[in-house]
Length: 290
Ligand code: ASP
Image (cartoon, rainbow, N blue to C red; front, side, top):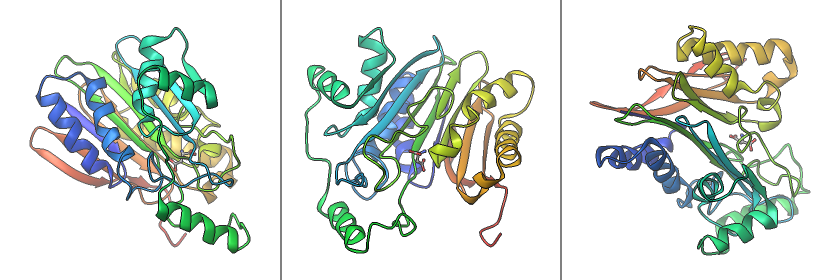
């Protein structure tokens, strides 16, 4: 059994996910429960409740789940007023014959499924947004924590894999902007026969190469998860050199429990398995001073 989550805040998500696995929960149960902790954590300004709003002051979140057993996928994008979008994405996968719901339709569906609507903009996030507006709405002066998705990968005791990711996207984005996170193959991919991968970083760059799908394909062809993550980061930067101005990061696992992580810049990610509970530094293409 194994859980891997992006960023340092993935550590808390992993604790929850690991306890679900230990109680006999599925990889999907564990991954969703793990990232729900992050979605509800107001200290994390780039995910769920307490996330940064869009330019108009509304928190719009994106989330997705993928089930490695069936290649089943469900996602929501531009969802407002629901604090746990990953659970809604799971409901899209399990309770509809669609894969992606957006905007008001996603919100109406969530309410129909019993999710409670609530205000998502916390006083802290509102005051940071008001400061940004007073300073002239300059997109070059975003807060330090202006983005960062939590992506989680889980391998359960039955050998099943799940990948999930959830984000409020980029702070002060254009209303309606959707990043890579809810897009299958870009933000996440999982296939029980091979492995699973998730992405974080600037969605406009990540979406160019369908990197999560590429990583799983490269693992299928014989690369380790570490090699596959590095291959995809290098390929994107070689193919589109301007993308190197942004952060792009991937974490991956294979069906045997091997782990990898690589990024353009510093990328800590959390790994939890029997006897291991730690934050690792991913391979980075550039140091902070490059
Ligand atoms: N990938 C997310 C997005 O572009 C943000 C991030 O992970 O940094 O919406």
